[in-house]
Image 1: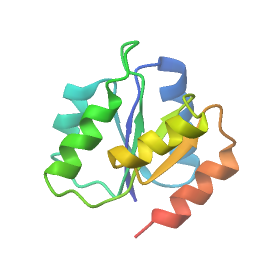
Image 2: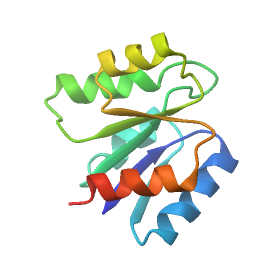
Image 3: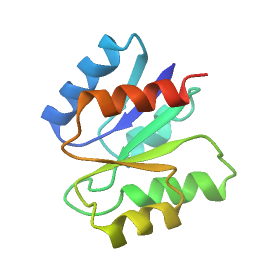
Length: 117
């Protein structure tokens, strides 16, 4: 499975890189919205998208763009912003699911299994 992970925190990016590799999937990594837009020219089966990029809540912009363009694939918000009203907000914006930071590796592996083609 090809997984796009959009994250601006280096440590989080490295952790995800390792977890994707352990799960025997192919990771595509972007540290911001522009890199993500470029990466989306490649086929992806799953998008993991951090909400807070560059210390602002701009991650949602990409999901809104994708959904308005007709993208129907799974997009998971990866965020520490997980109060009930925030989770509802992410779903309303078009995210398929929310993976709350810090997350357990088992939860991530279940997401991989769920969305693997």
